[in-house]
Amino acid sequence: MAATVFAALMGVGSSASAAGIDGTPASWLPAPLRLVGVWDVSVTLRDCVSGNAVVTFPAMNQYAADGSELELGVNMSPATRYPSLGTWHFLALGRFASEFKFFRFNPDGSYAGTQEVRRTITLSNDANRFTSTASVAIYDPAHHLVKNGCATETATRR
Image 1 (cartoon, rainbow, N blue to C red):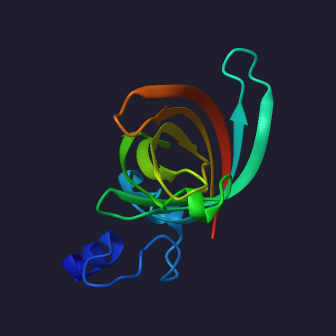
Image 2: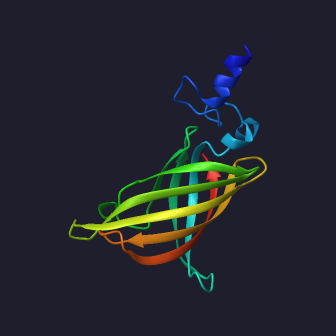
């Protein structure tokens, strides 16, 4: 019985996550898994020096129990970027790190390089909201750094 309960909490044997999708509240998950699930995110790109907001746009994140991550944002046309793939991991109670990357394209469809994002995520006590700070790095096709950026995020669990 205990093994069955543990497997259900870990999402073993099913595609459904224990983070609310199967009815288990996310706050009941072991701390290292509380980020697991799908999130509606509001991303604010910021001037790294002043901290002033530049633009805000929606995104969606999905965190899986295996440490993988999928991100979709609408700050660019779908013709100029692919979905992001990445990883996440537990840092401490209520804190996580995340890294993801996506391919960028020029308006003519040619390859423009990649964009990489590194985040520190702070989860709310009920595990249904998070805030994050992020650093952004944009690279050309030869992987030379073109531009750095900063962002903050707020998110709500779906």
